[in-house]
Length: 289
Image (cartoon, rainbow, N blue to C red; front, top):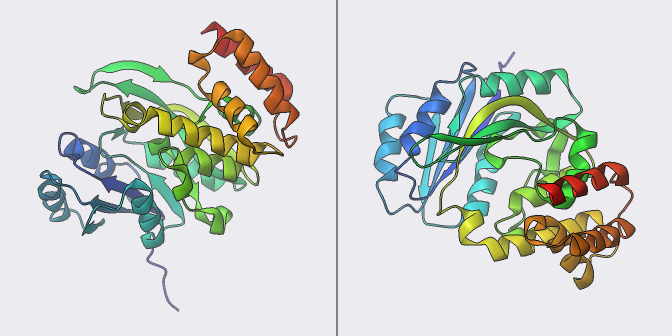
């Protein structure tokens, strides 16, 4: 009888010119308390010395699977990583963040116990370029609290996520049409069919840099987020709905009047998948903070 030697977890870590923080990110993965995983590193055409750093780690840990090729972009790298993965549980990680030692252990055991949850994120600490903690985020833990929060942005830190491939099946892919918001679109798409959750423990240190995608490509990201929200949560994803969705998801830049108008419009177009009372509580919270 054949024995399944596939790892329980496949970790996908795209790399593009990440030499400044890459070694620290890799160390945090390879020193996890949960050891039954493979680490899929995809070097997306880096022009710095990222490859030198990766090869040093490849020589010391056989769990690493390394792909080096020309630059194709993040979404292509993520989808390639999924296609190469052998584990049932798919974990995300970025090359400039730090995973706490028990991250995989906590997420794996949660998904084992909660077989209807398709994806699990975690609370996280914010760190600066030197690794100094500058803040923290505690996203909602439960599915019924997570779904209304989509009206105002992503309820997850992408590099904190672990997904159950057995539940998700053919829905596990990133859509090129939502550049710079491909993760938000995936969570929205999954939320229509599956339960999602977050762990209360801060199991990731998320590095905030001036060169991050959300800063460099803010306008394009906002457009993709609004398009995803209108497409997946509204009955009529037309230009007006996309405009109103953008107002909601850029709430920190908007007046109370604009937010309230957009909120009413989106709820009136909603496919009855969002609890309006909880959504309104979030609206009040974002106008006061």
